[in-house]
Image (cartoon, rainbow, N blue to C red; front, side, top):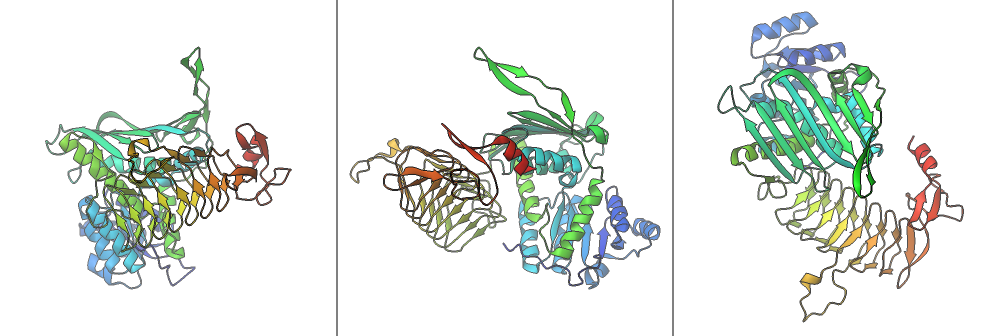
Length: 542
């Protein structure tokens, strides 16, 4: 699926957009695009409504076909009822317009995939209105998670509750939960492997008014989402729990308390867990209307050709979770997303899989990943986001590969091997899975697990004996034969491999002063391997 985008030819000028739908939420989009100087027209299924907003903002109210035919119109913002999102977005993309669609992108995953393909084919921007991704509090929360301020992410949960507005086009799950699913997937950085949901209908027997959705992730994280429009008061909270701290994003609070960090952690005393509490710490934020930031982002992407933060592929990922939750509510079963899309064209949206490659379903392949000629992914395997799998690579079965890994040509990653994020496997390197193989002796029950930790590099034609661990950011020289665990940042060479130096995060060999010549990071030796000196690490992050 192509992700190339064509920027507006008239660079420097503010793009001209029309808003389709001036209802409860559309009027806010009209207001913001008018304030940004880009509103060129409005339309609505009720002509009187469109004319009222047109007069207020000094733009024409025009019928939909006129907007599609107007070559001077750069983009269309779709804020119509959810059932019309797919049709309007498809027609706008086919007419060569950049498109912003309010959530959800569509009401069926296959329709969303088609919109992504059409955007790629036409070179147009497709953006989804997952508003809270642009909220200053969520952006800051995401920084806390990415910087490790909360430690390893363990649990995320959200409450989105209110009395009304009750919908008839979609249930509460589809109306309220897309925002929370989008935020949770963004924080954890991967799609869930399993989804379960329960719901209850009180006002209409076929439209759920209250739902609870549970998500499980390959990295062990868990999340749940509670949404209801039958609640006595409004509540919009997102709580993030890590092993070194917690944070609460409460959009109902004033700006000074919208994001609060708690440096709580769990200690151990006499073999028992004991909470270690800390005072709440409000996190300073720069006040800004999230919708203004979102609208400006759409205009910026149209001008620059950059892919939006919440592009069509992100919308497909959210829809996949929504559909799994809907299925779970109907069947009262846990739904696996590892095989949910098996046999469906576009089963792995946002990926590039060469026509000569094979993917045995069920398999999970993250967005942005590329799999090239004659490679084979066996069933049960999960490959993270933004990986590159070279030619003639075999993965699986049941192998786990993290995000942003690079596997060069002619490599086999057998069952029992796990690659964490950012691992590089050079061409022709070898993983074994049995210590003493014999062709005439079956030893499938003797496979030994091999763990390659984050950022490790394995050189061309190296051999990694099964049952060992390669530490973070270690460097295995080309042709080396590794027969025992490798310390973090260690450089090992030879047969059998021995440590002959230390390597920095940036892949630079360190001199005796243990200072990286590229980044300036400072290190110190320890029994557990090389470690970055914490005060310098903090300065580097800042």
